[in-house]
Length: 440
Image (cartoon, rainbow, N blue to C red; front, side, top):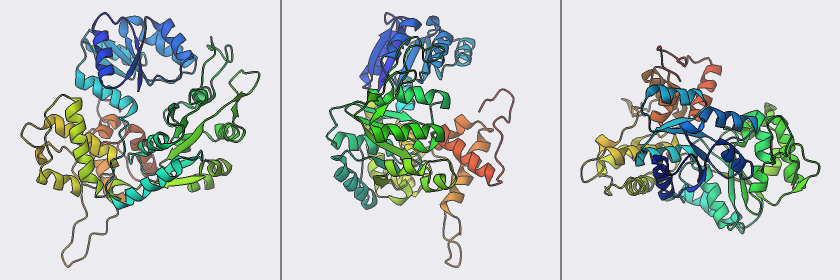
């Protein structure tokens, strides 16, 4: 990933930059807000901004919003005052990081910002079949639609396709359609010219141009507003885009990959997704099975993440004991690979023996389907088990969505989508606030 540091590298912020670089991030630096905005206008690449509080977090966030630049901002300060952290969050920072930085915290922030782009770890026959098909189509320029539940590794598969393609030497640019506000999406995709709207003080490159000669991943494409889908369709068909405020179209050369955790056929029936765009994206379709449908991948993934996070945190490599592995294999993993990854990260940090034991596997208590007396099985679907796990965890966190998502090992967006579905089905969902002073 790419990180922009706003502030002086002479002090503790420089140490943060070094730690980020040691974890594979490409680091750039700007002395202040004005220089940072100028840098971001001409480069659509940075995935995260670390801004020293003294540089003006509020001014930076306002500038980003005014120019329709969507990038998360993490505020940094040597002050450990709770009021300084709270003010930074009120100013629009995504998170607050105290200085001097802790290596584990830097790693967690980078992980939360963009994920860790691992190569696929595959052992199960169901997943091996998907990988063979992905490798087969990678050499073409055909658009690929990757579907599957949240956390199954759709972006990891997309990166694999890019690496195996003829465009591997070009950039891989990912745009999360669910994370970008609707009013910023058009500028994020197509860029804009100076003066295109209030606050557009210079030309800005969009994702289509940033991905020139490479691959553009439209992550969670089903979340894109239907009105913008028409412009996206035209860009794919005509191989050209119109910058906001531009006088002439701009030719593009990109391969399009798209992902969705929703049934796009159902979205088309509900008039939330264009059928013609669906056919443009769905030249080749790849379905990623959920982790519960590929149990042979669980031991390999667990061992992989145990090794990865031991190295990332400078800890001794501990193997996963047989008892711990049995516990992992017995879990339903509604959050899929992402949830297993988070569980192994915690296990690596909590283990203190020669191996990772069951007491270090900190996973939510879940009701599993077990044999009943008389030889019958409890008639509970996986959806029911997942729903109970989510609602119980939410009750445990007093309605705090962010904490519940962290415990469950899923994204806050995935949790909110589930809760919305439950509410629409008439199921009681704990409100966002159940105690004074707690924010969801």
